Amino acid sequence: MSATRRRRGQADRGSPPGWREEDIMATDQHNREENDGAYGSREAAEGWRRGAAERARYLGPATETMLDMANISIGSRVLDVAAGTGEQSLMAARRVGPSGSVLATDIAGKMLKIAAEAAHQAGLSNFTTQVMDAQQLDVEPESFDAAISRLGLMFVPDLQGALAGIRRALKPGGKLAAIVVSSAGRNRYLALPLEIGCRHGRRPASALDGIGVFSLGSPAVLEAALMRAGFANVAVQAVPIRRRFASRAEAVQDKRNSCPEVGDLMADLSDAEREIAWAEIEQAISQFEGPDGVDVVGEILIGAGTK
Image 1 (tube, rainbow, N blue to C red):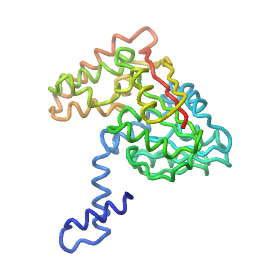
Image 2: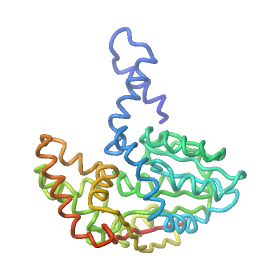
Image 3: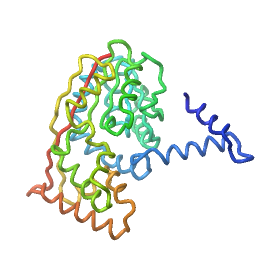
Image 4: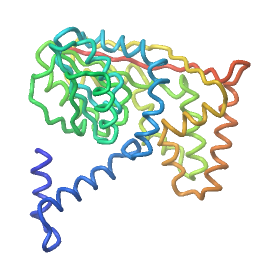
């Protein structure tokens, strides 16, 4: 069902008297933006923008591997699902050249706006964006040569529905390649702030399961999900990543910029209580500190399959 038909259906079920169609559409757009999740806010989008250079440094080589595993080359038509601010989308657009194209999709319109601005500044005319839920991909079946997703699939509630939609969008023989976060045990820099936020926010430990960042952290789980969706020749590889920050304060700022889930866990706290939690997070990060600053090692997984 298209977004337009959903809006009209809502109007038919009883809109306030005197409302015009454009009023209903504007309200629906506002509601969708409010429900885009932790990454849908203006603050999250701006934080993500500020972290672009750092992500390019520590995720760049793995992203190139993802593009290789998706078999993206000159002339390819590429679908990026849960694209965020789209650094990997732009890398794909440069790879496919003028004869190819990239469609970057995400539920968070503010994220895609940043991606579109970056593409414009880079002079990439083969790049477009569209606000779209990964669970309801409204694209032509069998119209893409490849699909990619970087650090997005683990947050999708209906993962199997999303994977089925991606497979439907691919041409026969087309490939999907996706990067997800490995386990909490292999990513303590990511896990510790979430655990602290959960405890200070008086959330049960099980609340971390709902965040989803580690939901595909086992190679066997990621492989099984791709196979259940009908992908063949499934392969998953673990890739180490390394991040460096000049100081502990810089590492904490990175968390504030790029991990809105921590803030969500502490949303019900007072400002003073929240700052106490952040102070504990800063102290926890000190374990990764050395003479040259903060140096953390983690792991991601890259999974791929063929339609």
